Amino acid sequence: MGNIIRQATAGTLESSDVFVSLEPCASGLEIEIDSVVQKQFGEAILSVVKEVLSEHGIDKGKLTVTDRGALDCVIRARVETAVLRGKGE
Amino acid sequence: MIRSMLFLPGNTPNIIVNGEILGADAVILDLEDAVAPAEKDSARILVRNALKYMGFGACRVTVRINAIDTEFWQKDLDAIIPVKPDLIMPPKVSCAKDVQTVDAYITALEEKLGLEKNTVGLIPLIETALGIENAYAIASASPRVRAIFLGGEDLTADLHCKRTKEGNEINYARCRMVVAARAAGVEVYDTPFTDVNDDEGIYTDAQYAKSLGFTGKSAISPRHVKAINEVFSPSAKDIAYAYEVMEAIRIAKEQGKGAVALRGKMIDAPIVARAQQTIAMAEALGLGREA
Image 1 (spheres, rainbow over the protein chains, first blue to last red):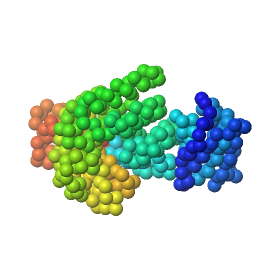
Image 2 (image 1 turned 90 degrees about the horizontal axis):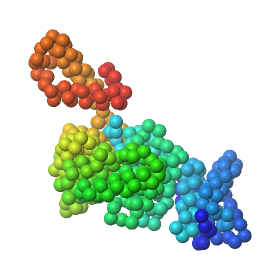
Image 3 (image 1 turned 135 degrees about the horizontal axis):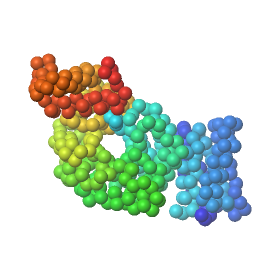
Image 4 (image 1 turned 180 degrees about the vertical axis):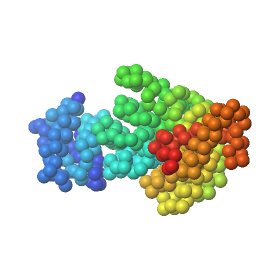
């Protein structure tokens, strides 16, 4: 639990990966998703991102997610890594 | 039945997600050498999520953690043990105490998390001169040890010699590892053949390892998996002969004969033991008599 206290990134722009960037944001949660499969899976990606944020008690922060066709488990991992780094853990 | 073990870098999704279709009997998800220090957290989280949500089908999963003289190994185990890999590979194991240190930490985690005990095995990576000399003690250090694994690259650095394709410099280590493993009743895996473009060399190297008694061999490239699987599988001729041996033994028992000959050669206990091993291996691999 806790908030994002610093800017952090995780992942890469390689195929099957996702690059996640986040930074503190006082006003609430802002999530921007850019995916090569936006049309088909944009909603599903957003849902996974929100789920991981919720698991870590994050309700404030600005996230940019650049997806290169990553599976859910990879998206989960990269968002979690970025969150833990952003929380300073 | 694990013949081939394929190393996959732990922080590379496009390789990990294809892990189960690369043909290896087991994958080794690497959190150690293949991962930069700044990405250790990222790799262990990725590997944990891959194990938790994706799975690797029939492919057995080993996770190579960081060495116990680093700040990372306990965090690796904290992340990985809850998702129950088949094996944990601690690197740079040089004595029995190294194994027992990792074992104790895993046991404490299992107790804390309410997991069934001793389901996660250990495959210590032996890659130092001291480790080779202590191979039997390492192999018998804990009931968790399922196999020991030779790391030729680090070993040759420790031996102050050059790693060659012929491998004369690791011959003693290979022999000692096999003897230690068999004496301790565990399996034993050979170091990778590192020239990924040498398609003939991998056959020669794997055949030599098999001739010494290794259970299987590791690879750093999917290109080597097919050769390793072929070499470490019993041939159709081996399987046919093994069944002939067992049939000859059966007939001799029926006839009350003490000594048995097959094709002019005495069938003694070691030949029967080898035949039984071959049949067990063939059955595990789904190879029939006519394979």
